[in-house]
Amino acid sequence: MNEEVLASIAGRLGTEVDTFDGLATLDAGQLWQLDAAIALALAVEEKNVEQGIVNALEALPWPVRGPARAILGDIA
Image (cartoon, rainbow, N blue to C red; front, side, top):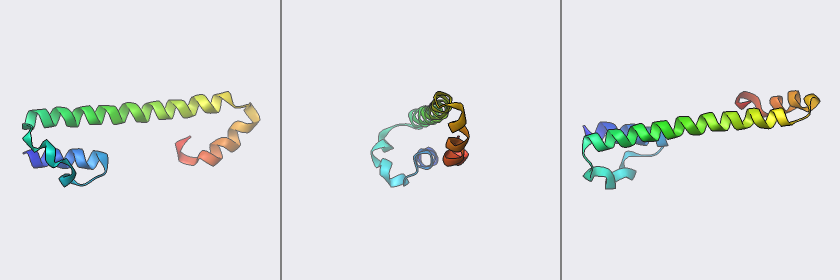
């Protein structure tokens, strides 16, 4: 059970499972709470970055926004 949640945490953070050997002392419930907290933090971070890009583009003069979006590509 712990291996499953540790794999989930490692996948979210883009690292190997053995990176989290120190978490082995936590029970499955604590690990699932940690996994949920990490998922939430990553989702909030993504939303904030996207909003920051939108805000930055809006601060640019109108004629420059198109080229700026083209430079940023998929993230804009």
